[in-house]
Amino acid sequence: MRIPLAAIAASAALAGCPLPQPLPDYPAGTITPPRILATTTTRPSESIIPVPASCPGTAPAYELGARIFYQDNVTVEARWFVDYKKDVASRYGIRNTNREVPADPDPLVLERVVPGFTFQPYDYPPPQELGAGSDWKAAGVVHVVELVVSNGFDPSPTVAEPNRTPAVTDGAARFEIQTYRWVFVNVSPPPGCTPGEPGCCP
Image (cartoon, rainbow, N blue to C red; front, side, top):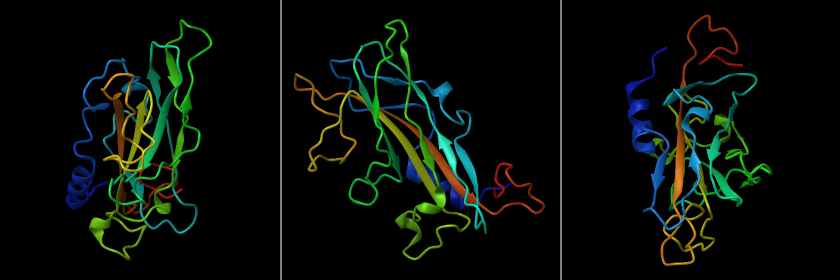
């Protein structure tokens, strides 16, 4: 299956560079932040995931998840975003409601399961770069899904990056956030595609 070069270029522009992963954001604070374990993420070896375009029946859906490592016995928060853009309200909304990731009751267990997210590509409009009115299911549409974790997030609506700016610690520094990204590209299913195979309609 060939992915159009234009789609790959668009995905690179949207995601920055999807590898290496996970990606730290904000300078190091005074508190060690939770770390996304890249090898535990859904599809950890893929930087671009093909989505069958224009499926006539059941729409494709992808279950995304990960585990994090954290030594402190406190609850942290995990947020999911689709095509995040800090100056567009419809783009910086949080896509999940179950965000808390509590510590395991056993203090010797330092890994935690992040509440997952079901990504349904057809439910999201194409990024604005493709122009208004573009077909949401068409080949070439690119989406970037991000998992962002932190000790806490700043609730102020006036921060530079709404919903994903980390909170201020007891001192002057902010917490860190860590990000893991999945890039999805709509592609035309190849002839004779077997339902359920990668790049094929369900």
